[in-house]
Amino acid sequence: MSWQQDLTPPIIWSIAGTDSGGGAGLSADTRAAAAFGVHLCPVVAAVTAQNSQAVERVFALPVEQLQAQLDALRPDMRPKVIKTGLLGSVAAVEAVACSVDALRREAPLALVIDPVLRASSGADLADAALIAAYRRWLLPRADLITPNLAEARRLLGDDEAAVPELARRLQNLGAATVCITGGDSASDPRFSLDWLSSPQASGWLALPRLQGRHNHGSGCSFASAAASALARGFVCVDAVVLAKMMTWCAMRDGQAAGLGAGPVQARGGFVFEPQAMPLMGWDESLTARELARWQGVFEAEPCDNEAFGLYAITDSPVRIAALAGHVPQLQLRLKRGPGTDDAGLKQAIAASLVAVEGSSSRLWVNDHWRLAAGASGVHLGQEDVLALSADERQALLDSGLRLGLSSHSLWELARARGLRPAYIACGPVWPTVSKAMPWQSQGLGNLAWWARMAGVPVLAIGGILAPDQARACARAGASGVCLLRALDGEDSPQAFAEAWMQGLWDHSISATEPHPSL
Image 1 (cartoon, one colour):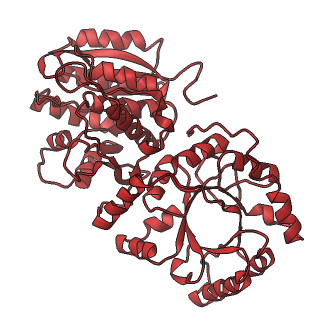
Image 2 (image 1 turned 180 degrees about the vertical axis):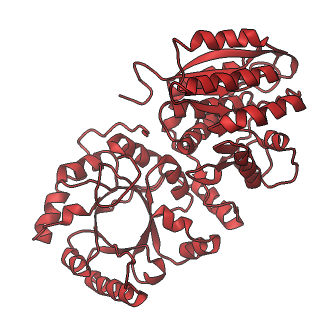
């Protein structure tokens, strides 16, 4: 079953304002939720008199009317996520906070706060008392807050701090994850840049800046998209990645509905559009070379899906020698441990290089990129790349070694793409005991989605123990299949390779349907 075809879709509540022009507020929220296949309950907190050019009046709903809506929903249509937009009054903020507390005493509940403080037309929608209420009542309860840059500065009363510092200060006020959306700022004329700070990962999220003016409702759509993804079970960072994808497509497809800025148009097909897959940075820096590399990624033609074939991983130079000429990709994986020194690592790498010399096999070295001169490339886990400084990352990219990167989630895929690697490994496809991991198995549908969205060859890794599994990975679009435990007990390298390669890329068999999963 596709991720958008649940028979009982998850429920979210959006507590926000109406837009008489149909562009923003609950109108945009409903379109975003529909794009994710979730059921949205529209709870009216304020009524606005507006059109495509201006917000003319705002009427905060009496709090007893707001509370009546919340009370009616609670016993029958309990949400997995509550998203707030325009609330309009301090009393509404307090009512939302109390309802969240009551619901959380009964079951887990995520809270997404879109602090609507000013309309895109410039109308002021919050006074000092309302901003103080946000800080006191909502930020400490928020799983995710999605202010734009102007709203983040207003919440903190700071017109000078850098964006990452603003996010840290909002987290210090209690918000678990902060995404400061910057699509309306002038950070870089080429990109729409958002800063994401969360317990899982932090970095800049980037997509090409769109030039169209029909962007009404983009902030509401972003927050509602993130709430919808959270309701589907995605972790917060992945939910933000999906929200950026959907909002970018919705802005691209925005259309006129009056004389001013038209509404964005959220549609479910966004999740299958490779051009909407963002890049994610590794730290707070945005160097000119990194931005130029990102521009190259966005401008690149789709990859030719280079065939990597079988990719054997071992810690033994002797096994490297046995498999050379039979398996096209060989990785020497040696971890540093007690008594391990550079001399021993260099010796093992040198022996492996001798073993593949003159054969059809490539040698990849895991981790030790500074010692891997002469190898075809290196493979790094994302934690290894994170441990590098910006200068060290650039030195790695300048080394001439081809780079392979591990990836276990949507946000890791976004981060990996920004380095323009030779391949990205998607895993674990099936449960594995070869390496302790906090990740759920990806499954073939997610592998197929990776292959569609990555823009570079994708290798399948994790729990692949039989040739039939390798063939299933190939049908899902994998350019290569990594083997680790499957090497145990192999006696004849030639027979082993033949058994695994037989029918591996038989394109007459129907492919796996791609879909992103948890």
